[in-house]
Image (tube, rainbow, N blue to C red; front, side, top):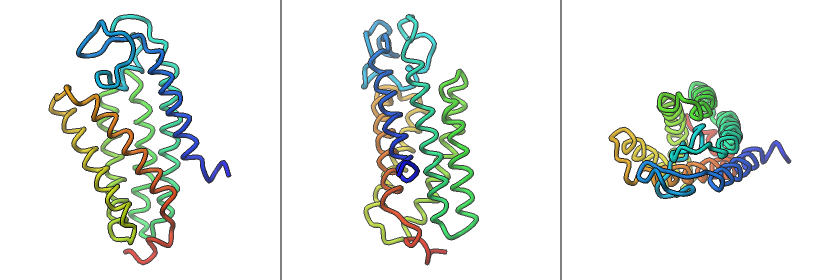
Length: 202
């Protein structure tokens, strides 16, 4: 039972830890360094990982946020490994397994001072794996998941575009939208696909 639902359990634990981190975050954001607490529309999730909050105070949120990212990375890595076993084309299966799961190592390293380069590497590996998954889902009869995959990719790409172009006004909000849509997609792919859905796809 635990193994079957590990992805879901890990994500729930990760979200709880990250939620606690937002509650104990001292304050400060890019738009207002003197703000108190974590503002969901102004703060980035990465603010939770710093040794010091933006307002200069010690950041007790760091420990909780780091723990949340560990569980999130493990959950996502488990998803990619499990989903790769449903894909009949060996080359695609290997890409999903190794790029997807491997990218989660870099995703965890986002909590370090190497945040910017790690987010680029992790995002690239994640998107390549998700693209391969999307191709197989689009060839299947999984109608709802087709929309979720395409929507998830578009949201992810748009958020990366905002990040790369320095459009920070709505980026904190889009970061959370991407975060939520990615979790919904991964849980959907975990629970509403089976190996038989892809057996005839080459």
